[in-house]
Image (cartoon, rainbow, N blue to C red; front, side):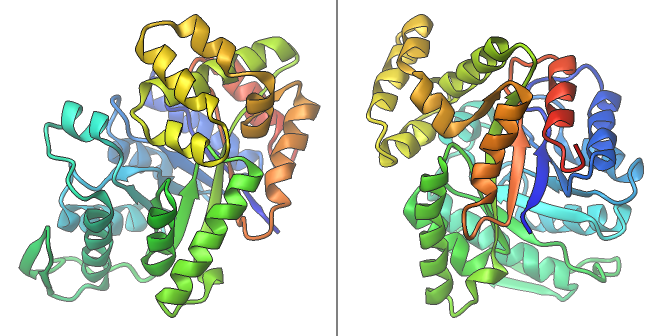
Length: 333
């Protein structure tokens, strides 16, 4: 049976309590995991701690902590601590993010994102094992680091993001899970093939890699408002967040994604939204009235190889719209 997760809002929320309230609502609705992004608002670790302390059964995860702004040793310490605080419910989501975030916001060189992410995962695993870490890599050279507390009795899974075929293949080789976003159900099938190929190269069972599909969802009685929010969200990511999302859509056959990106970069937001037509919106999102949204989420759950669907929300949705959507597509709805 496919899990149904919730990816908490990426847009700024009024308080930490409001984010915790979403998590508690997700727990009550039967969601399996609440994933928290870290972008340019509150740091994820503090908020994840609050989420862990005020919930009982739902898993909590970072989606994602980038592999640049914290050292691998610190990420290992953080994962161990959050696993303790959550009593074994933590899942560590890591990824390279992109140049806009890493270079412009954190002032670091982006470098080779795939290699850096892989080395980070390998070091975090060694930290979580509780043994002295001796590591000689291209990016990191560690000697003698060891946790001063007991390592987690149950090691949290390390799940990674990745957009292109090679990145997803590498996830199949070394990660416990992979998160895909901005992908249609058919696009997810292509990336699952990359996971399977990577697992084979790593002499692993593909079933050991948890595949999570992130789906932008907006389920409102006002169908047009729901679709408007989803359209604005997708256009922002394709046009304003580097080239990764644009390229992901082009790989799936949506050549107009390049035009959407260019129009957004030129400041013509209206043109970008026009180019993001209903076909693209329906292929990528679960947006409309509650019944339609549920049906579109279920399209992803029907894809062989998807283990979880993570419902996410448009960045422009307000608190009432987020709560309405979360309730409408909850597993126990």
